[in-house]
Length: 329
Image 1 (cartoon, helix red, strand yellow):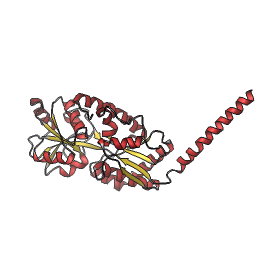
Image 2: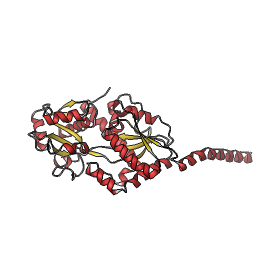
Image 3: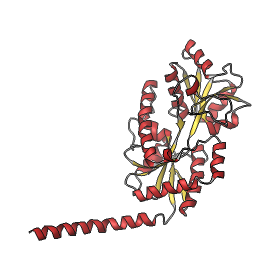
């Protein structure tokens, strides 16, 4: 009987090993064909442009082409759902974004995916802080003056944003909550129309990503506060909100690469290593930095760091959305 049990155990172990061997072999050989990165926005936008740039440099390190699959719609949730349901074979990844991987659970009552449970975090990409903007004709020369006016005139300060649930909408809500002020948010169909009305003086202020706002600052817009932890050389003389009016205030439009849950760890590691190797190209990283894109230390770009950041952001935006009564359902 004892001999039979031992034989059965050895047979089961051999069977498990035989089943695991092909998967391990595939992970070791990966990638043998082009890889797809799903970007849940239309081609030509800032997320798409950043993803294509990083995919190109990372693909070179892997010796394989990384193709961008633009699966746009519903604030990025359509593409995210597609990625969550993809085969975990290392050939489909999701380029994640603060909106649909951080804020979406707070904005949608029924979401077809869970940013934490349905994905394997791979790496955190460079992010873009935001900048508080007013027109050059605006009477406000600082964030302190803006807040002082709002406190004396509740609801009269108008903030433009790129649409309900957009980064600019959520960050303005966070800003108002932390400052203890009541503002009126004006939603547009995209950042472009909102920016145009800000320049024209139709709205009083707006938050925008540093990389897209940079070309507009000076001639037509004034930057009066940054959401970054430290000041940025691209915005000389512009203080951070955390160092002036809102101690500890920091946020950014962050990006990360995710794989469907169950993707082999060996593949996740290979993709992450290829990206870190690509970052050794100083000419490339300096070009990104000059555009207002913030590169992260290696430790902050790891899969573990991305997983922790995703979970904390989901909780953060649930609180903000609840306080500001923001919903997309």
